[in-house]
Length: 391
Picture 1: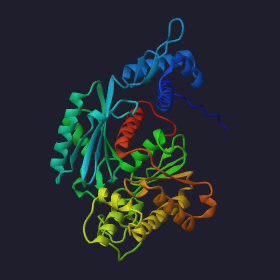
Picture 2 (picture 1 turned 30 degrees about the vertical axis):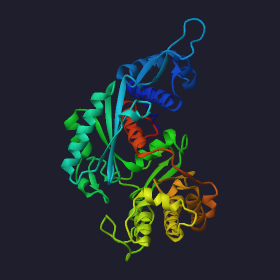
Picture 3 (picture 1 turned 135 degrees about the vertical axis):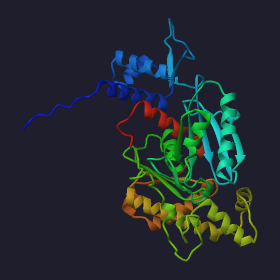
């Protein structure tokens, strides 16, 4: 047998080391070079070269310690917050949001902008461009990228919206590419559930967890999965469309063109429709919250219907992926602990006991605006310095 020599390219190894340091600083905050040497196990020259490279790139910045030690204090390095900025754009059915953050992911609330979603793609793109230009002009630091988050099927190769069941004006378009050509800042198109997974893992309900699933039940029903530390994308980037599993062929029409899809019964939007039908007029989320807060609200059957179908989706996910956690992202239904408990009760009836014994159900702790920020940070750091765990 002939021995094979595996050659490790120095440039690739250097970038992998840089990614290790980036991940540490993202998770733990500012650190001295000495601390980074201890935590990473890398040599002093290796850490120094990696930090210098990341400083030059603008992903990191140096700051003085808040409480200097005796003698000459060493500077700390951190994710760039004042010298760099990123923009997150959330495109939703009724409202769009533009946020600004540093490379540490902290959103600057005073720069957040919201506007009603226009009824055409051209008007939508023009509105996003106008808001992005405004926040770029107002915010300090160099703009490194824009993350555009949508609830849609996105092709990996073309970064195109193949289908958006709840906002068809996006169908066939490349909003990130089109926005980039207008504002001359790198833009990336991000699937909402994938971005939410990254956000929950960075600062939410799944910090440090390498095996978890996320169900987004806000408008549609989307699934994101991180398995073995890697985001599950599927062959063409369209994995996770659990909401379009047909559970009742004679059921309500779905935005995808079928009838009786799971998302017609297992979402915040589904609860709003059921409640509106029961009282004979259309209500919004705020009115639904007020009605559900009443002791005898009269919507127990509607709540149970939604809880049962969310649990059905969760049981599919648990049986297939065997995650340590299932995180539920909801703007209405899962806000209340009793409604979340109703999902747990149904899940125990529908799922496999042996798998559920090692799985917890939790409410998400981050927003889609935060997801847009986490998503673009992930794209930028991965493009600069790859990780063995990235898919």
